[in-house]
Length: 304
Image (cartoon, rainbow, N blue to C red; front, side, top):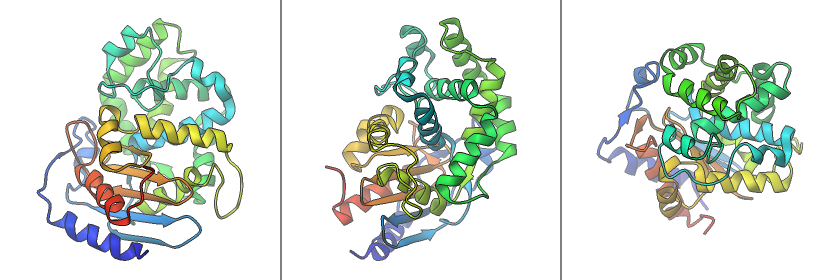
């Protein structure tokens, strides 16, 4: 299959779409990004990789990084992790306080804000230097020592993170946060502020297309069983309250971020990352979702 041709066709079709959506503005640093950026990069497992547009430009991957923090916590904590966070789709916004109150401080899944904050609490408890060890972990998977957080985005998130502060304190009142709230949130903001290009992101997520093994080095990072479970959570929870719509249109496990990025994988086949900053009302990239819908339509490759 000529994936390069497919990407070129997608780029052409995306360029003619109406310019819908808005750039995330509740994190001021993200509001500075040009809304017209678009890039996509495709990695075939055991094969070539191709990209178009702004695929070599770094952007804040935001909630996409929650897959990687979950992966690290899962390797440390094992199935005990699920005593503190669920695996069900939320059906509500990613920062809902109502749902968390109703469910007595146990987040629905590890990808909504509350769930990712619990994952950070676990990492703070179990790691001597959580920030450095998380960076070391993703640099190994990405095979890139230049992966970093954007300090300006970290500061911007801290200045405006009032709802996250409410979430963590609500969970603390139910006994589901063990550490100092500020320390946990500091790690959370650093994780969400990781920057990658589409190419770097697609390469990193080949791990989840390859049963938890880094393809080039053959190093096993997580078990096949754990990889399967993370893929399942991406499929059902990776797009907040738009997860069903993404499954319907695209048919791949994936994860979005409010920086405009989306990464998706086809197990044993490929990984793909797309970036377009304008978001729909659910907080997902408008052109990103459309590009991935075109990819699975044109290639006839989805998990269904």
